[in-house]
Every structure is written in C-alpha cells, then in structure tokens.
Length: 105
Image 1 (spheres, one colour):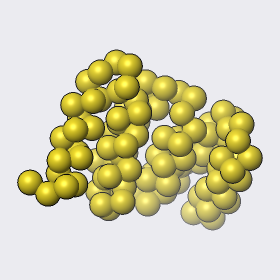
Image 2: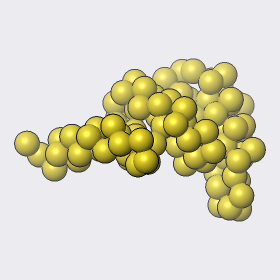
Image 3: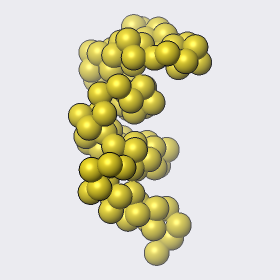
C-alpha cells in the first residue's frame, strides 16, 4: 500500500469522527483533487461543506472541482458562498479569482 493509499484510509477513518470529520473530508478531497479524481473529490467535499458550511477552503476547492467537472453554475455557487464566509484577505482574493474563472465558462 502506497503513501497516498494509506493517507486515504486514514482520512476516511477520521471522517467518521464527528469532531474532526469535516476537516478529514477536506483533506481527503484534496488528495482526490490533486490526484485528478474529480468526481470522488466532489463527493467528499460536498460532505465536508455539509458538515461545516463556513469552511471557506472546502468551498473553494469544491468550486474548482465543479469547474473542472464542467459544472459552472455549481462552481459559481460555491465560490460565492466562500466569498461570503471569507474573512482572510487571501481567501477573499482566491474566491474572487475563482468567480472570475467560472464566470468565463
């Protein structure tokens, strides 16, 4: 079992924990996203956002995932929600960048 496979198993197990579940789902979503498994990423990131609606990072990654899956309207919705919750100027800037990107689709 490779390092990525072990990480996936660890995050899946942690996702079952109600306290750390949303964070583990975001981490798992990142593994799937950067592994170009966009459908899997979307599935777990949607669960992460359901568990923690104010998680800006999960929403931004979900927006990018939706964009890559050709789901422009869903990408815009998630990027807009991320912008609504973003406090950190870097997060706001990233949300605006994603909105510009998906606005072109």
